[in-house]
Length: 351
Ligand SMILES: [Zn+2]
Image 1: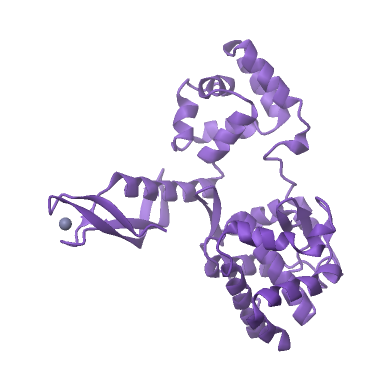
Image 2: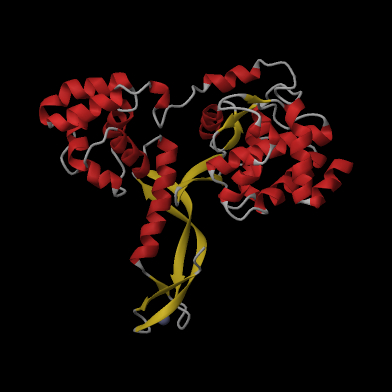
């Protein structure tokens, strides 16, 4: 994190190396009051708060990201991803959507799409929706663009970059009786939400993919040393490591409950604790375990490292995409590998 910035202090009329500080702030975005953390640049000479376009731009981005997450409005990255999926230029994608020529350009630059435009953008995520748009706006598009859209539409739906399993997949977990698949606990949404909240609070920069590993390690470790998982979640093999089986269902639960906000940061979304869960489902010993897991997650510097660690595990190597990672097969091995990396975790096993 950058904690200083070369800028100009109008008060001292000189270039200074300002100190960057974080503080809670409120901003009104389209009638919504957004609570977020803002960065301010402070002059080291006079102590004045310096207005700097870079810092203010970043603050706006943060507040907008929270607003977007709250209202399910696509981010600039998602819009670009959609456009690239259809292989269109900014102008052609605007025409495809039936927007003004410069509209997508503005949205990819960070402007917040209005509700009607958000719905149209959503529409492009399904082949039926995209076909309707194509039928409606075909005469505005070049032959090359039409061809490009049709090519994208011929792709099997499950391979679409934003294709997500339905939330119902997670709901299906609720009905499961305790077994080796859920760590001998029926899926408990309150526990899952509280665990994610605590990990988001304790782990630095908990990106979504990293959060999947953090939850996996917490559940597997709990199962190995306490005989039961913490949440009853099932896990599956994904290319980049173990994930919650039906993770988009978990994401849906998280978004619904508002206990965390998904905030755009760098190349991904970070989970930021937002609202304390109503009740605390964990015992004192379980809290100690979760603290240990957070220390373990924080012992990795880059997201890459924790991925590499998970790729060394046999339970990941011996499974293929989408296949369940069974607690009975995995938890012992996972706990052992975790303790080998961080011996202090052994104290938790002893209890
Ligand atoms: Zn100054």
